[in-house]
Amino acid sequence: MPRKPPIKLPTPESRRVGFAIVGLGKLSVEQLIPAVRTSQEGYVAALVTSEPDKGVEFARALGLKDSDVYTYEGFEGLADRADVEAVYIVLPNSLHREFITRAAKMGKHVLSEKPLGMNAKDAQKIVQACHKAGVLLMTAYRCQYSPHHWAARDAVQGAQLGAVKLLDSIHVQVEDDPTVWRLQKELAGGGPLPDVGIYSVNTLRFVTGQEPEWVFATLHQPKKDKRFREVEESVSFMLGFPDGVTANVHTSYGAFKTDTLRVMGDRGNLLMDPAFTYEGLKLSIETKDGTMTPSFPAYDQFGLEFDHFAQRVRDGKQPWTPGEEAVQDHVIMDAIYESAHTGKVIQLKAVKKKDAFRGTRPTLPSAEG
Ligand code: NAD
Image (cartoon, rainbow, N blue to C red):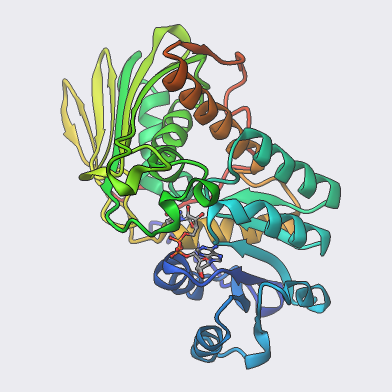
C-alpha cells in the first residue's frame, strides 16, 4: 500500500512567535493581518499605529487587549513585552531605518517591508544596527517565498530551458493620487523603481541566482504633471549578468497594470504573467516537448514568508532574504539612477558566488501532479 504523505503537525502554542505589526496601512490591513492569522508559526501579539482608535478596533477583532495597541511614540513600551519577540515594519520607506533601529535596540527581531531603506548606504546602516544588537533582520520579499517563483528558478537553473540567454520583466501600474507618500521623494526614496521595479530586479537575481555586472538605464520625469514633480514616472533599464546574459526591464507609475517575467534559453522559454501579484500567479514553460503549466496547492505568499521568519527566530539561523539581500538591490537601484542621470553604463562589483546574499532555504509546498 502506498504510504500517505507526512501530516504537518501544528506548532504548539508555546513555540509560536509573537509579532508586533508596526503600521496599519493598506498592506497590513488587507494582506498581512489576514495572512498572519492563518500562520501556525507566529501570531500578532501587538499593534503599533498613529491612530489608536483604529488600533483598538483591530486589536479587538484579533482577540487582543486594548493595552496591546502602542503609538509610534510609545513604541519602546514593547521592550517589556517578552511575548513580542519580533516586529514587522510596514511603514513608508523613509521610516524603516528609524523603527528597525529602535526595535533592534529593544532586542526584537525584525521583518521589514521592501525596499529596506532609501538607498544602499541607508540599508547598510540598517543591517549594521541589527548586527550590532544581535537580532535577525529579514526583508519581506514575498516572491522569494512563492512556490511559483521557485518553480521558475528551478527551470532557469536546471536543464529545462537549456542555456539561458535573455530575460525581461515589466512591473508597471498607474499611481493617480498626487498626495500619496509614494510620490514624495523624502518618504519614498524614489518613484516606481524602489516600489514596484524592485520586484523585477529582485526576481531576476533570484531566478538566476546571479548578480548583474553592469546596468544601463534611462528615465522619464514629466515634471509638469504634478504627480511627478519629485519622482520619476518611468524607468527602463538593462542588467548585464555573467556570460553575456542580458535582462531588459520597464517600471512605471504611468502605465496600466502589467507584471511579467520572461526567460529565454536555447531549448525553451518561460513566462510568468502575472508574475508579481498577491494571488493568481501563472507560470508556463515551453520546450520542444510542449507547454507545461505547473499548479500548486493554494498558498499565501505573506503567510509563507511570515512562517519562514518565525522559524528563523526559533532556530536563530539567517533568513533566506536577510538585510544583505536588500542592500544588494539598493546597490543596483542606486546604479540604475546613476546611469539614467549620467547616460553611462555603470559597472558593478563582480560577485561570483551563487545566492551570495541569501541565508537558509525556505521549506515550501511543491507542485501538484
Ligand atoms: P500605506 O500608505 O497604506 O500605509 C502606511 C502606514 O504608515 C499607515 O498606517 C500610515 O498611517 C503610516 N504612516 C506613518 N507615518 C506616515 C507618513 N509620514 N506618511 C504616510 N503614512 C505614514 O502604505 P502601504 O502600502 O501599507 O506600504 C507600507 C510599506 O509596505 C512600504 O514600505 C511599501 O513599500 C510596502 N509594501 C509592500 C508590498 C508587498 O507586496 N510586499 C505591498 C504594498 C506595500
